[in-house]
Length: 600
Image 1: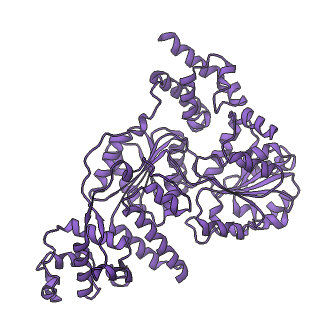
Image 2: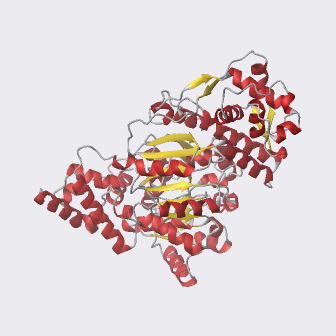
Image 3: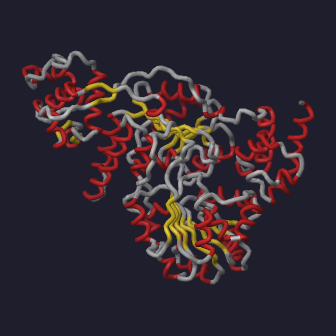
């Protein structure tokens, strides 16, 4: 471990490991297998990169995304690590060169796509080479119940049989108890030590609101809190990503679309701009994001509700990887739920899979509708606990107003029952509010006892009631009847007068003092020096064709602003400044600090 600490400092520029990195690294260095569950931004990569540098041979990293491989290899080469990758972007000559480097022992880390690794040619190459470890990144991709399933991951258990003496480390940021068991079974990790570091990302502020004017809600959020910030906006459909990106461009924002329907060159170009330029907004479907190692994403916004809590956690986790303040902002409506359930019903999955997906969607809707601390509910879903409300979600900062919805809920349930459980929300509201619309008269629903009993509540209030009853499992949506609502067994006590129900009062919240994430700099930082250091970083990144954060993270620049190092020795003690970067960039950043001090 002395060698591991020396590597951590000299290569990566850090003085100490974070818990539980040291225990994980010790296990792998000593030849043991490990399953690591650690939140995004928690330092998972170091858990295999350090052992790969300490143990003899080359560390092989199985990664599902080409973009992630290229990004990490680029960052490692900046640190002086001999890293490369094998994937479909290489031509035959480049592939042979990398293979020769591996055979000659000239590589420290090699990233390989799972579909390439399982080919006999690649396995034979690895058997002829000195391998220090196998790291299986994004290990949740092995789960057929998960949200990012990759069929090629199912074959990775062969690593245990073909290379029994080489340690394996499987890593993920997103896995509930069921997914963890599946990872262990499918990757043959029964004897691996498990390290579950928790799921909490305290720097992320979770905020969820109802849709009422989605574009204006989004624009207000961006202009009020994230001017000039990089962020990701998720939409359910490809067309919507393009429409929103175009519209944001018309509003003067630098926004790009990303979805699987775009050609590969366009996707690659947009992704490169997002990674290498500052302040770019990516409007994307779920095709974008897994493994994106951009630390300064200040917000992740959802214009549609994700289908699972796992997806939501994974996607929001792309914000604030640098540990600085970030926003996870979402708006949703009942129509999102209906669309997602229609998609599930139309899928080719088994009935068991559809039931599991339905359960997960209900959990996601429940997270949206709760009035208590969202972070506590989110962590609880993954089996993690937070003893006290977090103080950094909308429920904690602006507690929801509730009201006794018992009478309204009984009216709503009665209307569903008396209309034969065959109609959707809009028709039921017309009955409750006494509308003489053609459809109401056609089915004689104006003769029902529930006709006109709910005139004290407007259409939006009734939609809120129905949505919350669906979220709590008292009503369900019948997709075979185009969104008709049906009674569930759980509603009986309420209908019988045996239970009361408190509902969220959906109304525009009073504007409170904003805490903008983009100005989340320590109070004593000289903003002029901060901007000067960022500009020098930008110029260096442009010269080398790499993202700015590959030169130095924001947090490293902030520490320079606070510590004001005046020589190489002092600069070398800044977190994130390893020996290679000190040698390569030290003089230039010291010059910026010295020049700034001279003009003050």
